[in-house]
Length: 362
Ligand SMILES: Cc1ncc(COP(=O)(O)O)c(C=O)c1O
Image 1 (cartoon, rainbow, N blue to C red):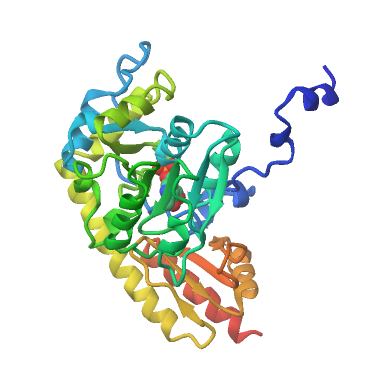
Image 2 (cartoon, helix red, strand yellow):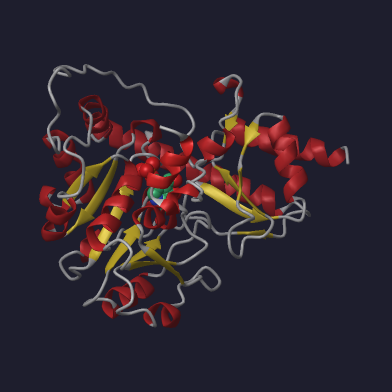
């Protein structure tokens, strides 16, 4: 079969589509993994010491491994039937769109600047994308409400990536109410552990159209496992479970993830969150003192976004020193903005030192 035939039979919209350029895909590069300082993907620095027994891998795993589901349901204070384990929260995003949007007919609504996978998954599925930008990091409720009846899924991200801010609960409730008869409202809580604000999962009984996304990739330091959770009322979970792959959670992943959710795992996670928040506060104070830093976004997550006219020289100097951060300047409203993941104290000191060195040499 020739290349031209492949192009002819493929879905035409995929041919020109730009896939999601994850931090890892953008900056994988070659070289020694351990020589790089990875502050570009909001992962935790350092790894836990997880021991794997991995028995019975000759058998297919349970569709939804009971120990994992029970452990996360306990942690999230919901019932096991309100939960679906997925390959990362990213798979949850895709499944929600596939469950609630008819391809080439229905739309999702997003509020940029926001997490890129909502639009990519929608595009991949053939769902339309309605954009209602935030205003000063708050939802534009009037703008959003103009689309009642026109969209099937609304994605809200709180704390938001890449901005880091929480959305006001009152605003989330306004959206849930406005779309109570017409759309599912997804509240992406990938970073909720870093925030002192309460999760919205306790609203499930009140709002049949609420879906919450969670992950083990951030506070639990398990991005490499690819384990996330979709939380919703049981009828919604039953629907989404119809479109997921037959064995979505590999047995070794379920085992490691369940261990991370036991009492010891939770206490390690809480310590990590406290340390990250302390380091974030220290890094923010340092940024505030830098004359080149024009604006710092208040963050309830494990990263800090800041604006600087020296965006490019700073980014380049860090790259030259094998330090990877994320350039967010192409996102709506985020001209000249860089996002630094709060890694270890040593990693952040390296960032500070490298920038200071670069500036003394220009
Ligand atoms: C807001 C948000 N949602 C979801 C995800 C995806 O998380 P996971 O690693 O569980 O797929 C990320 C990852 O960066 C994120 O920032």
